[in-house]
Length: 436
Image (tube, one colour):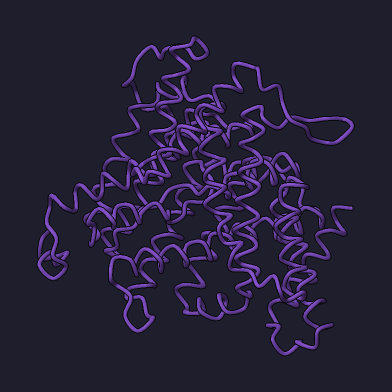
């Protein structure tokens, strides 16, 4: 194993890699409880999604560690799970089984475009400014969902939304959790979001807002309610032209967000670990195939898109330099499947602070947008603003991709527009037409 991962070359050891793997796991363990809660809003079985989350994270991370040999962990991604539940299922009205099929297809397309070597062309087709806007908009959307779950933001007939009852005990618990988690993150505590959820749950139990779990360790919840459901529903679907367009947009959105989020995370974490030389990432194809394979596998077992987690940087900061770090993290995800009884204490008030603060991290891309260029600012702003205001990630992306060619052409910068952007322009115009 030492020779396989070249421990001497990277100046690492079993102990150092193991501690790094544990650090990465603790930094992203919150997804085990947040993802089932988000996908349960789409009507999916919470226990089955818990198992699917742990299993897809374990498989994806182990593939990354054994084949790509990078200290990068994977799990169902935040933002993509919100798009799955709140836009595709609750917004558009597609069955969650069909949404899983969309995830599966996006993973297969990801595998194909990576295998035939057109990754760079696709990455270059989408302007960087729109990528930043999409990431930031998803961050605001996730934070908005968290604020709703906390009861801090509520519906209002006169103003659409308003401030909730800040004296409500459940809302106060979420606010306490937000403060605790924010303190841990500001202090740079590895796994701050996970520990924040843990302390919030404990506080809820102490004051009687959350009941004690009957046990901590239990049997692994059955995958039966979600396993293979991505294909079970296909025979019952009537494929109208409207549904086909909706599915194309859904698949493109899953693919778009996963593809660029993965590419950015891989580069950032690999660069931190010292792998990037002359702006090139060794074994990039293997890493991307690991991610895309995990996405398709995750859809089969029953969860939204599995992607590389930026929290892997915490493990690299702790000394992780090889794929053995990912092997340790993957094994811990397998072990975590036996802790499903803890789901009962992870209420919306417990997960709300995590959603809000993950949104903060994702919204940091706003600083990279060239706001002083109006032809960039308009489509970027519409992308960012539309996601939380229309409660739809797809709508935000669609508006941005429609306005970008228009503003660039009016500015006399038509030569800077990639042909793919014109294709997407008409796809999203058709999308709005069919929605109407």
